[in-house]
Length: 330
Ligand code: SF4
Ligand code: SF4
Image 1 (cartoon, rainbow, N blue to C red):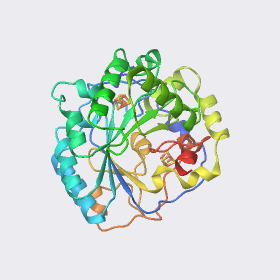
Image 2: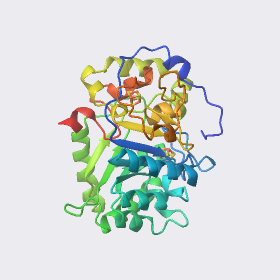
Image 3: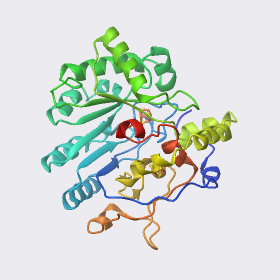
Image 4: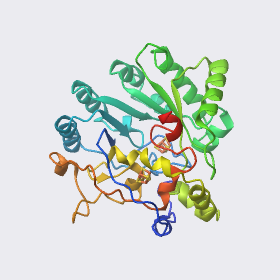
């Protein structure tokens, strides 16, 4: 399925599912989606990213992001997409944020390193001490190629070896390389620690690859994956599975408490998933806010817009942009 295909929207169903009320805490991370263009079109992609998407953050909005980081003294800039590196303003944004002393994370799909013009990308990331969070949904070739496309596994292995050669994932280098796992289908991810041990052993034995941590994330019942669930008649069963596995203690660690999500135009959401559902962050009577309006406004305590998809964050061991909540906190 490609981004251009007509897909059934899961929002009308998700909107009817009640979820406990939660509110924002103090802001630590600005997660910025710099565009939907991607060299891959993965089955589970909650952004519906792909090579034909043209939406991308312009220079003026990048300037607002930098002004916000500076004014609000934000600790971490989390850059996402699509493949964020395909936005021509990606590198200037990274350099300027690092100059401000901000920690920068790149949500990196690995194979983008082999796109034309990206030959020096790994070296650029290392030079700027960018923390790399890379998607690697399985250590087995068939599963990766099935979920992310033919040839993605081999390209990902080469990219990981390139990052390792620069020091990424090696103890004491200061260059963080974390991998992200999400299941192939409508099931909850297995325990993060056990899977991480398997990944470390197999990638090291077969390819000499090392990395810091594995984050396990549940697939969100939205966008491309949501449409597939509907098409296969699996939506209700998957939502039941998530809701039954809900754990109240995970509510404290969900990423929307400390992260603010910005779309490519500069509009704000409680998280990336809400961004993809077009559920903007609301404030008082304001139905949609732009980052430029929050330069002097602290949104701690603001209610978070929740619905049925949020069980994807609180089911079982929980999921956040830093992986399983229980184990991340342990
Ligand atoms: S690499 Fe990431 S952004 Fe690109 S299509 Fe796959 S999941 Fe979506
Ligand atoms: S999907 Fe997760 S991160 Fe987003 S608002 Fe719901 S609980 Fe928070």
